[in-house]
Length: 116
Image (cartoon, rainbow, N blue to C red; front, side):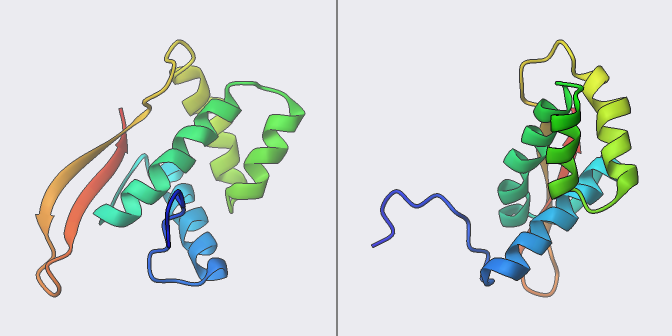
């Protein structure tokens, strides 16, 4: 039974799923918007919001936490230098998911995940 298990599987083993979410979170931070499927967007949205919340602390421990998740140094610099000050007075809800339609090949729902 899967009762009370919140982890989204996305049809992948643990390693590839972790890599997918880390790369998607890095892309969202670098480009501030990304088009993906609805399931992937809903899986990565809490991760991206947690990254911005951690970056608001502005200390070495927060930077180390960001380095664990984000894959490039530029993404860490952007979230600490640009995104965290932008949302300093906001208590959460930094991203939004906008529906765009369905993919032609497999009819997967495509959404845009972007910063507010």
